[in-house]
Image 1 (cartoon, helix red, strand yellow):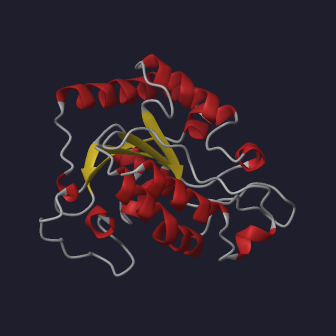
Image 2 (image 1 turned 180 degrees about the horizontal axis):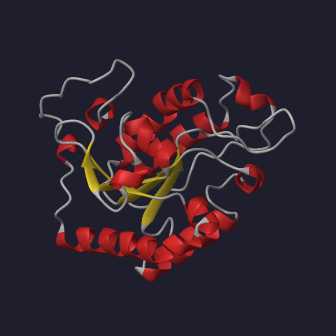
Image 3 (image 1 turned 90 degrees about the vertical axis):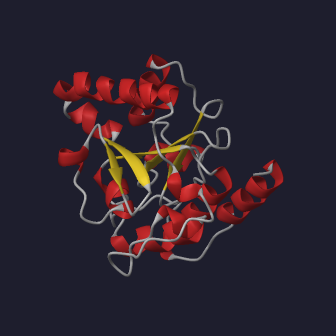
Length: 219
């Protein structure tokens, strides 16, 4: 990955007017980038504060995420990349945050997220919450897989954890959330995460569903 390639892609994302979400956005939120072959967190979409600042996870959820990263001596941008699948804030008719629908996730994810991941080639991907998880694995469940590494396709893996907003609403899970980040740190230190999907010579695994893609597909 060259800085020029990522900078060019980011400018393209910021200029995007390919779907209806452009109508109500304040700013596009491409994400923030850490080092290549590093750690990458992926959420679903920007909220109000992200839309205002053009940066991912800057509201209360973002403060908690920063706290969790600080607990394992990591800093956003310096050490980790933070992306959302959808780059513009989805809103209700009343102007409130809403969950992106399947069409929005697929359209934006396939248009932009895959390209970002190809350039970043992260050693480890961590999904934040159920929406991000299901983007990569349709039948997966956060409640069953939280704190675990799961296979998406043959050789492709992600680490599953909760969205920080969920923890803010369910603070009784904070101890478990801490253990997830400790596991992330330990996995990175031991190097036992298997990013087999980044081997371009590896044969692609068959898709389980036509709309589901392996990590191999964007590399």
